[in-house]
Image (cartoon, rainbow, N blue to C red; front, side, top):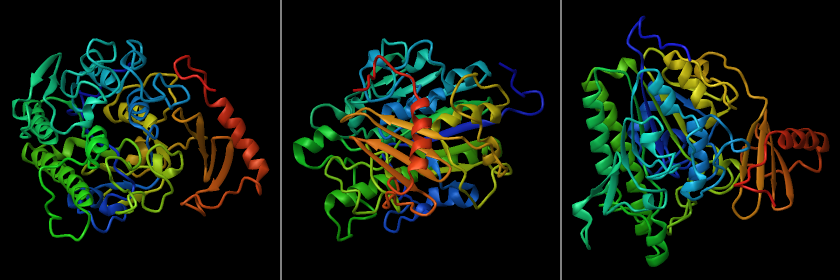
Length: 431
């Protein structure tokens, strides 16, 4: 791996902010009319908004695996939400390990979800210098945890014992993120701020019908909406507030000009914990939600800001996906990405320049049967539950007009690409 470009100037910092189950239409700059997201809207105005960015999968763990390793779900180690022993292995090279080898200080705060304590995929074994967050993906459903992990050690969250609810996890994570920035302001760093907002507390939702946890529903207390939806909106605006505080901290430390900030979501909007994604049109113009391979389940908001580097006020429709982040960030910091991965660098697109296009983007999903989707140019083919569907996304962004019967040659061409896009995995068998 090539040496980083420290000699020319200080290497750029990177902050990657990932929301959890935030829909394409949940953000103001993507068309949301009710939920306030002023800081994300300002990020779009001061940077670039991408219209055709895709998550790694339609649920958490495989999407985050694609983000971290550069492989799509046809080749990735993790292709579904599974147990620790089926998550990352020692040989699965990650973005954090790439940054660590390049001399960066690395920190992850919030939800990792692809390797637990005592397993090879645990954050401190995968190149993260600082780790503060949940035990497992399932543990990350609660917003008032009794324990969190700080490095390799368990931390008691005293305010949450018994019936008390004083330690709101997103607030704890923001505090730690700001501390990380303070502590590492004089050296190159990678901060992965993996929020749990607006994921539902699924277990609480099953017990009570309301799995949306937030200290208050301001600024929506007076809205004539269902209480649960007021709370949902409040969580999203709270995340936006936290993002604003991260930008404020970067500015106060004099780091804005040398920090690339990226924002996205791990998949489409959820319909869990009693929340109805149709209430706020969380999928925007897209069809489907989390656990669907229509674009509503996998196309996500994606914003980039880097003053003087990323064009301000630009809208970019270049299609790319999470597995492109490893080579993109490698180019940004002046190192070489591993060979053999599925990702290609989108760094030119970040800078407003033409970027290499994928021949195709591929996804597979293993819950409720085996499903596949592939996008090649404007064409999108989905095979799910014995049905084959073909859509032209340029003419039909909502995937409402199935053209499979009318375009058999395109179905055949994309089916061949789809068949060649994957290799079998013993942990995720087909059939």
